Length: 307
Length: 289
Image (cartoon, rainbow over all chains, first blue to last red; front, side, top):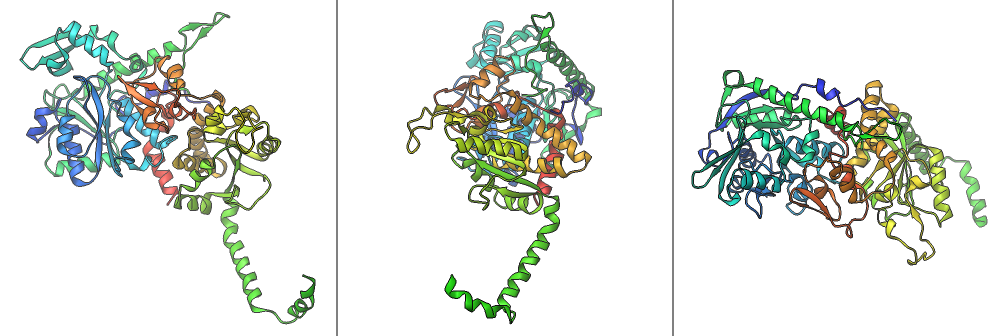
């Protein structure tokens, strides 16, 4: 049995992953910006890829049966993309459509958006397609979003309704930034809670995540590092590079060099390092959480060491 | 036929053209094959108590199967595809189906395959975990006395698992290419193949029971699930739905193929392989062109 490199190797890897270029950007599409969380990067890129035939459709987080509950949908038009724009702060299990999208939806070129862990799932699905027949070569564009942690729906409900004292259905926008979780309502109220209070609502599975900026996406994007209304964009793969260059040439984005904006790449690096360092400690702590009869530590399962 | 012997005698005197041509053709074929054969690995498929879906999956690589057989592997044993009656020596043996203990031949052939292969693969859910044969209690037509079906690792040591029902053509293709690199490649290729195959080998060590319950026991109960949805997307019988961001398994519908857990990014995630996804996928694509 070949022994695996210990997961501390991850620590030595650049916390921002491999990328070809990084830039601060904002969509030039006013309609998209009205719906988007920050710079409208994901929505604009998918709309462009749809129009150019790079993808036949994209798995995105559409509206679910309850307010602020995302449900994976296959968007094949700009209108469907717009309905899915913005951040929902609880996970949309987009991978649950990864095979179906090539079957009953009949897509040959699939776009998918997801958190860093979902990008890991996409790449594992391509390299080890154990139960995903005829899917690996149909993933045409995987877009990642920065993610510090995520919440269960019920956790988000507790934050919005108990802590912020607002009804889920009256909320217009949620945002995390500047040390606060902020809720904006349809009628103009703004409620906030400090980030240190939200930790108990974080999904346990997020505590072992060692990726902040979706290292394995073709292109990844998030607000951190860029001014309000703008997004930081990492262009990572050959596929991502082609799509980004095409979108820029088509005039779909305004861009600013990342070293010319505040707070800039240092902030991204800082938060990525914080997340990965904290979670690496959690992964390590799991190894000694219990106690064996002989007095030595007993560990929990470590997904980075094997099944 | 005795009556024809006198007629065949004069054949030896003048050289008959058609037979000469045939002989020449044969020589040519052998020469063409000779060089690649020396470098290829040998793969066989042993068919036990399975539905032949695993074997069909191999063929579902279509042109990819021909490429595999042209450049990387000789198929030396397989039901209907190869006219060989007895388990031969081989580098990689893919075993399809669980092993029926009530069928002596199955047990003997499985042991023989183990003895004669370098790498023994539990190919598909039945061989790895029993899959639907886990539900058999005998009494079925036309072998009502056959009721004891076990995953093959209860009879022989297994090196590597390829779970799911059916398995995926692209996965068995990847394993075949990696097995070729492992057995015939240079040092760097061997290292890559070892890293790629490691988790599938670890799966074989993990055990021979699988169920949608694994998602509960080994992912959610262990505090590792982040709700990505891969398990629900993977399940071949749609026994898994995502409810409030977590998998919900319909256990009566689960066939125990092991696909959901093996596909889950929190069952294993080997950064040494997955971080290099672009290069590895290009390499496999290149190898298949």
